[in-house]
Length: 102
Image (cartoon, rainbow, N blue to C red; front, side):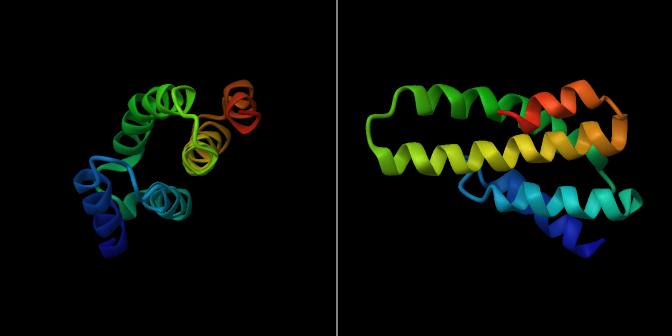
């Protein structure tokens, strides 16, 4: 439970989304024991739904290969988190697959 709160704190305070690992960590905790995170899946899913378009727009405007790679890595993590949510929690396999293939 404490780890879930810590990841939540990082996610809230990380306005620039530099620590995409916090989302992956939070999803692992939610997947294993949903009750260990008091704010649950909605907290993560809502933030990802608003963050992904921002990262996609930022990536589209980049010319620097290193910046593109960094943004792409974060997007991959974000989409994987939504894949896990849709595959394990909602059982919406079409949406899960859609996130896995992005």
